[in-house]
Amino acid sequence: MSSFAIYFQLGLEHILDFNGYDHILFIIALCSVFYWKDWDKVLILVTAFTLGHSVTLALATFKVLNFSPAVIEFLIPVTIFITALSNLIWKQDNLSWLNYLYAAIFGLIHGLGFSNYLQSLLGKNADIIIQLFAFNFGLEIGQLVVVAIFFLLSWVITELANLKQKQWSSLISIGVMIVSIYLIYNAKFW
Image: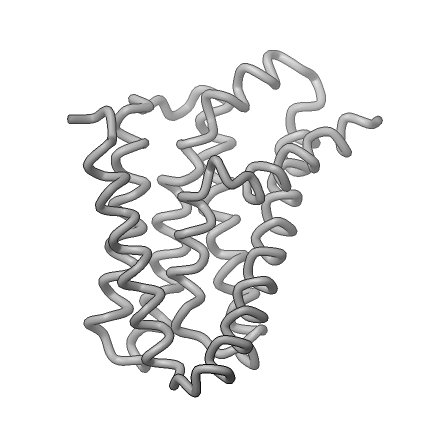
């Protein structure tokens, strides 16, 4: 298996691993305010998150940035909570641009969450740029899989339960907030 394939698989698994469900929660919180027909907006949103994630992942891997893992593990659920809370308090018109902002800025924080592990894998390898690209490409594809599954489930549930998008978004956001509060409480930062 090529180095590209290995790191692509790692990026894909990073998102699709249910042990790292915080990433999935963040993506769901970001996307819950959109309809499935807004796939083009969601693609931009997911890519903004990947770009933010990629920047700090690269900077941390090259040892330009160095943050305490305990602080990052605390901040990640805080970003999830803020995103879900915003879904409940802001009007739909404001949420689109706000979620793009969250995706890019909070992506920076989420990128630091995986950087220590990736640094240990990469070491001083000469192919580090290709490996970082492969990892982030796998991350992007994994996020799109999560979004596709979420939109499929959203469509089925809203149709069966006859829910409006705002009702569904509110239910999802409340659920995500509850889980993020649990994650914040259990962060080692305290």
